Length: 353
Image (cartoon, rainbow, N blue to C red; front, side, top):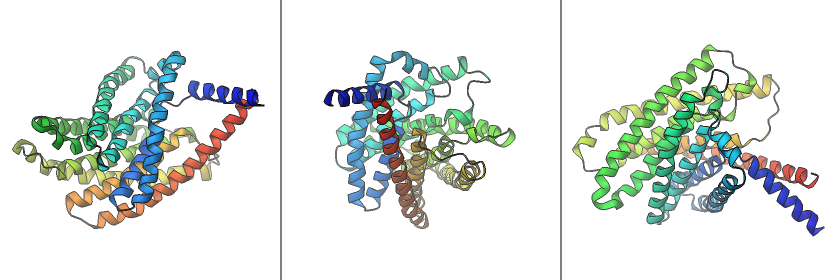
């Protein structure tokens, strides 16, 4: 019996490693952003519980990823060179930064800085590799902006701005250089969003859309706008002491509000698309790891609304944040239940093979 159980566990782990979704760190992103917003709004206990989950999940997923590199390198390379999947690896960047914000807020500033530096290193590797894949390996039939979740690259970029703004004041003489870099990264994310959202809007509004085109990854459109809003608001609230950067404030102010409005506009449309797929087209609602890419935008929208309320001194947005964070937590709980059931089902399959 023990040998059978051990064999089943080994078989389950082997299958999980081989099929590990490249965007698995979206779980950490979703858990972390909800934890951070709960902390900012004074709900320390549920925030700490989610933070504890993330402290366990992040190294676990890192270990699984490293094992997959060792045991299943051809599968990793296949994912890295697939235009439909390569941008999913940016969840590693965003997850480290979102978790880093929670770590920083709990007083571990050195560890938060280390996580930011690690995330920046991964971002530098991925940003040029992913666009090389998109340029040289994509074809008309392999991937499009709707399926690819390409906007996760913007999420990873803007996440560097949010954590970087927190740790920058602790860098001493390098602080001003850091703030210049963070404004540059915010701008890069903004330009990439403009490029991708143009392609996305053209694809979804002027071409046929089928049920297979409507996936949880569509919510990254809203999430990328929300995290850009959050990053812009964070830059507005930061004291960088540089007249050159202070002169950019009016531009950041206006752009940040437009981004929040644009992200807000998408929410009802994304709900309509989901109702059309699962209600009218009768597609069963089943768990997929991509659902964490739906949970994260909901949490990030709550965080962005809070930050913008502080940057604009407009308390009404704070009320939106307080409501949205509980909606995000409810969706997180439902998705976590789906994950548990899917893991149980996979284990049963492993026992019979």
